[in-house]
Amino acid sequence: MNDNFILLQVICHFLALMKKIKEKRRTAPNTVKGSRRLYEVNAAVWFDMLGYGSMLEKSNFDPTKQESISALQRLRDFHAIAARHSSKHFHITAINDGIIAVKDLSPRAKSVTAAFIARALSFYTDFNKHDISNGYPGGRMVIATGFRVREIRDIAIPEHEQIKSIKKRLKDRQITVDQAINEAYKVRPHFGLLPEIQANFAFTKAYLVDNAGSKGGFGGAKCYLDLALFQKDELEGLTFSRIVEFEQMGIKGRFGELSFYDKEIVKEQDFSDAFEIAHRISEQEDVANLLKANTFKNNLRLKTKN
Image (tube, rainbow, N blue to C red; front, side, top):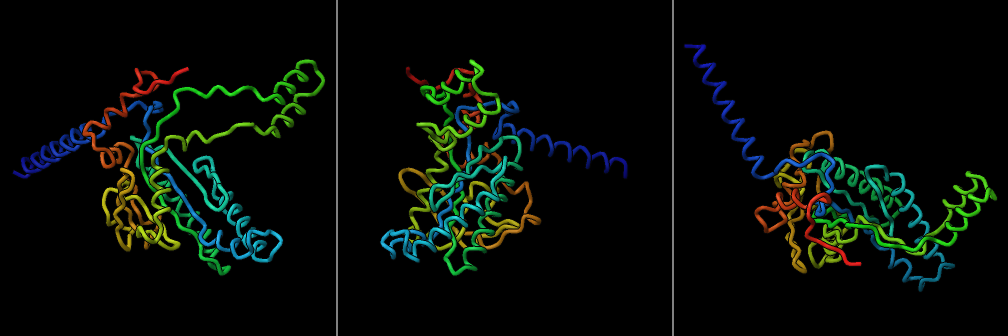
């Protein structure tokens, strides 16, 4: 009798496991590791240092006045802290008193989502602690999700004249390889862009939320996280003081105002992977299959013209 009961438990457990596997396959189809999709699910950080413009306004944007000197020192501190938090897995781009960080999320591993948020919150905590201790208001961070469209091909940019000169002199043995590398490193391109934020609608959402400010319910030196990043609104180790609904220019989202975060407590399985997020932010039921199908090896929906 006891053996039969144990066997029945094993069978029930097996059937429940098979059911979960089937449900996962329906919502998150398998994708080849390393495949480059035309449409990516992206997480984007926009961080805005509060009060910087008003400091300069007081001095009429005259950099020789004390108010401006203080503002510019604050800006240098901001960039220095951002540089310390940047890494191979957390690229940061500074645009004056704001920073951008973006990451394509994985349909295979929730850890990518968890790690990106942890790095973003580490910077948020570090800078605000420093800034507020110096009598300044700190900064506001928005972490949003959305789709990003990859460029199918590189834009044809004419070769820099200085690079041509370096190549010619190196070929003619007028300079050494070390000299060529040093010169090339200092060349400043005539045109530049960040491919990761072009047609990146996670960044668009983050920027619009920050721009909404206090009137839109996103005031103060707070951190607002897109709830699509998580499996549920209430998490152990990561809690929100309130939920703010956002809708503008066809972009919708629910954001939690962060009140507590402890990366040692929060569980990796509480985060969402790329395809789970895609189902939450898209109105198309088969969105995960569309993401999977549109790779650079398959027929792409988006075409470019010469």
